[in-house]
Image (tube, rainbow, N blue to C red; front, side):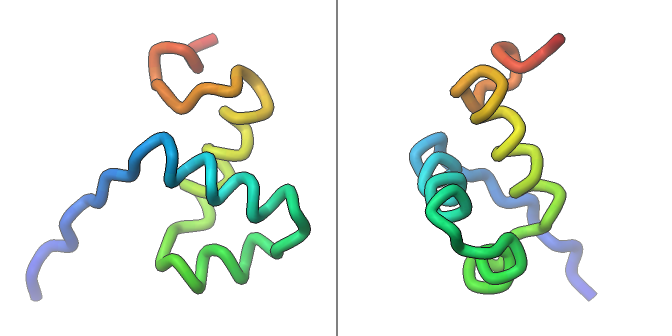
Length: 61
């Protein structure tokens, strides 16, 4: 079985996913529809709330 390739997402895409969530779409629906992991979505939501940035360096505490 081929190793699943790690996908990279643009900041715009992440922002869009967070906006969907904030507009009332459920996490489960977003994860399912966009083939994401719940942990990735949770991380983006947290980053957006903390710093408004998805760059790793901006989110180190």
